[in-house]
Length: 299
Image 1 (cartoon, rainbow, N blue to C red):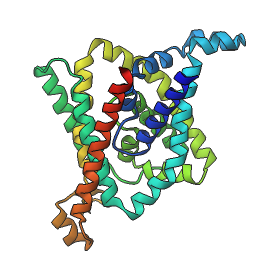
Image 2: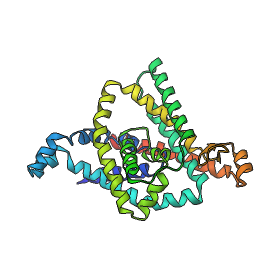
Image 3: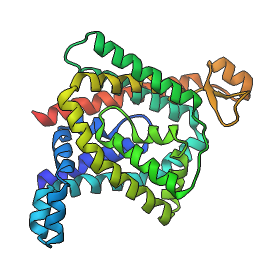
Image 4: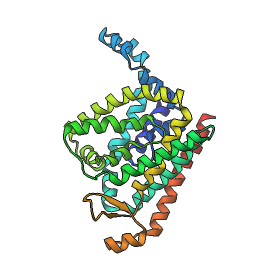
């Protein structure tokens, strides 16, 4: 019971990470020592598990998929998502600069942590990092802030965003930001928009089960290259979480990063530099505190 209680706490930390577009729930799983078990448990949801379920052999099905572990993890994740959604919506509207600065600190520190997992740096690793940066920067600068609210797109958003939960390096909320669906999903959770939530969850379940197999294969065959690509993606994502943005003159709905002085000149709002630095440091510190606590729990 103590083990599953601790696993639930780790799930809560993962959910808290997935709510904010900065740090990955997969990173938290990696740091707290449950990552491999999570991947293996998700992989076990296969045709064998389905056969046991069809035969109504519930106990065998539950043991096969490591059900108690998955229940503990996802209970914690869901608790965080539904308790923090309202707070995130409020902060994005009323305090964007401190919040984005906080996210930037989380992303930066998480990137440093992920890069430590690369065992040997060579040309392939540097190329992988460069490709990851280029892809993330390109997506950040060209993606519109508004996309379709149709249920089919919500399903696709769930499929893609949930992959971040099992990826130590990419934030699911950041993916939703790129797809223009972060604020929409936060509002849906906030307002208990059941049809939207159900469709998103179905997409998430589909993506989670299928992607865990691919991810396991990539990490076994191309561990360092995969980690380097994820690290590059995180570095490029700093463009998206930069606190000061000004609207594009040519493309409606797209904001570009700007210097604090440019932000003030264009928007007429204070850049809040000292407040931004304060929350940036808090974001950096939190990741290192989590890493310290995770290392302590492993000993």
